[in-house]
Image (tube, rainbow, N blue to C red):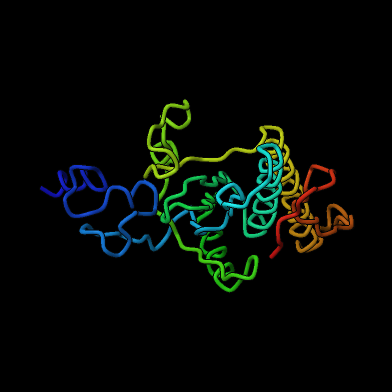
Length: 235
């Protein structure tokens, strides 16, 4: 019996726990859902709710598609650089759905669970664009299960109100450069930490203790050096 319950946990066959919340960390019914939402006490993934504001949803929007995409890419870059301060990022996903439970949601998967918790604790004391930031640990572990496959192939007929994630994507070159910049920063941090450990070792009679200097690496910086036509509000 226990094995059966474990095998169906979070699936459509589970009549107790909400499969949508388990898969995407959000449910259109919210607290009124008839099934349980089991909030994780630890996770690599965090959810920052309703962060991205798509200008095209405003009735008086006059921006073209290219301008909206450039603004989104600036937002993606800002989110990456800010969230990378808490730890190594494995994945960053931003929803382009229009349903209230997914509207503008930002999902970040860290390499370490401790870094995810650190990010949640810090972000919940922050403001963005004059509004408080709401962050929480998310049960999402596999974005392939959370994303709408029909949307990726251009065949989703539910539109922005689909209950699965419609992920808005920046240019591949931006994603590649950000992750490469993160890897270079982490490599430099590991090098500095090795030097500090060697300097803390007691001097050896057989060889001279290393005296090489060390410096603290700068945080991840933007690999792009371009003028922004529309800079999103900062933290």
